[in-house]
Length: 98
Length: 150
Image (cartoon, rainbow over all chains, first blue to last red; front, top):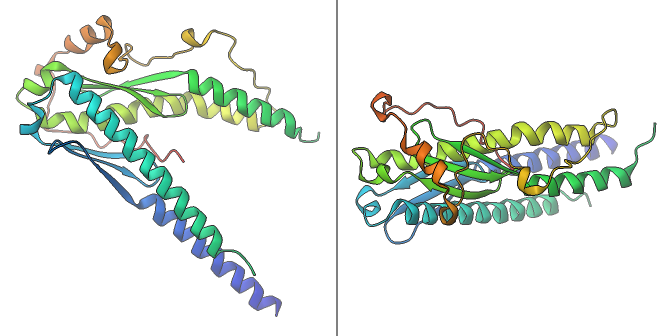
């Protein structure tokens, strides 16, 4: 009985750990206004990529471009934070020992 | 020696406030982008050099932004990490910074500031880069410092 219980706990812990790792590996893109490009952050909050359309960039000044990219990164990171928290909440719920 | 939970919580809150006030900046190797983050790693400012948009390699802007943000976060982590360890380590005694918040900023490079508060010195330093010596087509894979923040 105890053996099966321990196995169950280990399996749930492994599933929880994998869910967290999966959430942190996720890529969260954020579309910049118009066709300017995309900002991508990881589920763990790391800024992975800023991809900008060279032709579209020419419609911006350096200052306005920086403002748009800054806003995009902040929004992408905010989204990633929320997604990460939601994933953790689900994983915690599923890992509950009943 | 027993764990003083109340003291730990108070110090953690003080450190959190201190890190929120602190500012750290990082710049891409080519000088195209400069980012500013709080001690907690939150991105609060970004500047892009004027010449980058009109130059021969505007495609370098995106990677430069990533490089600058990750450099700023590395700088913040280099200071915040040991402070957090000091708070958590019961054998160490951590004291909050006594200097005013405005003097607390530790800029790795010249203050880049947010787009609305770009300083003359920061712009000057960025624009004084010698770009003839920079290979814009080669980006070092050195972004590992911007690891996950939560």
